[in-house]
View 1 (cartoon, rainbow, N blue to C red):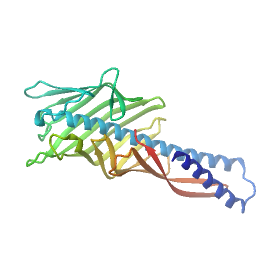
View 2: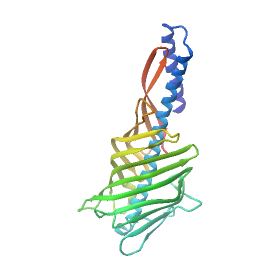
View 3: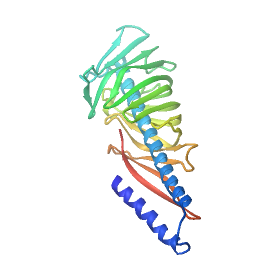
View 4: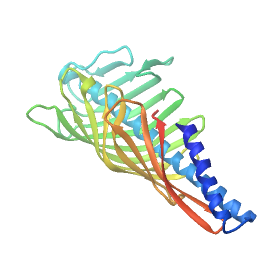
Length: 295
């Protein structure tokens, strides 16, 4: 898909160059510089959208891990080899949840995960008012090192079934370090945790109903992300599978919209943005969409 996008860009610019040549046979160096700059700005726009997608998916995965393993006392929890989990003390609160993926790492949903996640719970996760503080210790997913703090507050619990839990999440000083740079983020989310079978976490979903995120991408460019359509995070595949967010930056004229799909665990999302190309004294705009692979 990426090769197709590059071919499309080449054909798009070439086509307008032919049209412009009907009015002007030669272009000066300044015109060429403008054309190059517009292309670069489009690439930055795409990079900011990709990095916002990365941050949304990674921290969504962390919240998903903590949510299902924190439920230990209420529904006997889950027992896995990756990660190993402890929730102590056995009686009473506050409790400390430690999810340990090991120093060598283990395979989790097709990714090599290392280090540990610690969550401090003030009360039952199915109790209104409970707060959960999440931190990281040498935690990484493949080549991504994840750090920062997440604070969860349980705002509402369905008193009849306890299968719907509404919570808010505050992400502070979040950083994702990768070989190509560092993504930073701060923001707030409103999440609804929907369960079907109490002892089967694989059919649970987390719906993000509000999102406000600010930060920088891996090249240091600032970005802002907001919710367009409710995001659905599927715990069975640990992936955002539905919904849309918009990413904007003061460094770019046009925002980008990220569409996570229609509920399928397919590992991809579509980025849609506008390209502005200036040739000579003429400027043209075109809406384009590119498919990206989710982290």
